Image (tube, rainbow, N blue to C red):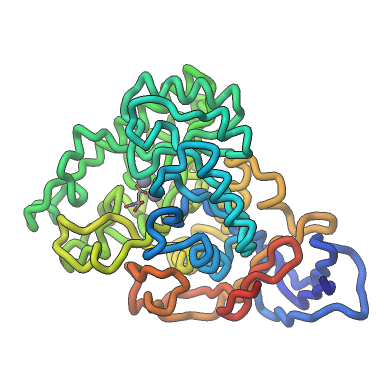
Length: 423
Ligand SMILES: NC(=O)N[C@@H](CC(=O)O)C(=O)O
Ligand SMILES: [Zn+2]
Ligand SMILES: [Zn+2]
């Protein structure tokens, strides 16, 4: 691999500096034979880490594969993704998680870390073999798509996780409170006659799980926090020294339940789009560090599962290729985060939460050459059909968003450049 010289990029948005990438690392000094990337005006950030991606392989390769999802990730500036376990078959055993990891390595565009299921078949009845999966290198477990609702089972999972030194990521949804739920319980859902998904269904599980994390000393991670009340609970738990971390999705930062008026199921997601007041609190909580990081919850769905009646549509939205731009629109442009802050929420914190040691590193000599170049001045218009995912269910269709990922580099190798993936 030829050395690569990135000329004039601004690390973390600060003073321009040349970055020499050699043998997979950021290096000192200069060389004659380097390939040059002119990066005048571009911001250099550590490669993004997504703790919450649905790659749909095995089982729904008609909507996304590890190859197409990895391409979307690289184009979105990501260098590592955590692939959720709600595949078919479920990633609840060593064979499936090893398959996902191996396929990710073959594709080679991002580090694909399989998430193991907490319970067998995501059924919430008995624990999966967490130890066997952890022994293959699984760092995070989640029944995402489903909540581990049984408090005793959740307690046991947290207890095991401490011995294995892994994270348990919870999709917080009390199932009895969301039976038949279609949208955030509030004014807009009521007007359309859609069954409500109350904030309390999310918040009651988060409160319970924080108490269980205190009891067990485990590392609890809360997926896709969507309400103001949930952010307040996490603030409280952290103030008590409870080892809890939390993510927020780009769509919960930008969008709200006024979108229900469109009656377009592209806006259907779990947890649902909440109120504009919730979104504002989430942005502030992310800026403050109460919410640790942004995670996409990239959830591809087939056209027939979205072009149908609201109640029949599947929940979920694409996110990998639009995340950075939504963060720029909601956090950077309003002055809530600077580029150091973007590095924190997109890369450093998620890497630390999962326990990755080769991602989210400082842009300094001797560190892995794993980084993303962003053009802060560029804008682009989202077209679902042009995204690398097989599915096209983006809620940002036709929107012009600020900030564009120009180049992604993983261990010194360019994985995406100017909108094209390189293998
Ligand atoms: N977020 C969603 O609405 N859907 C996710 C599951 C999940 O994250 O709960 C999916 O797998 O489609
Ligand atoms: Zn979920
Ligand atoms: Zn999810």
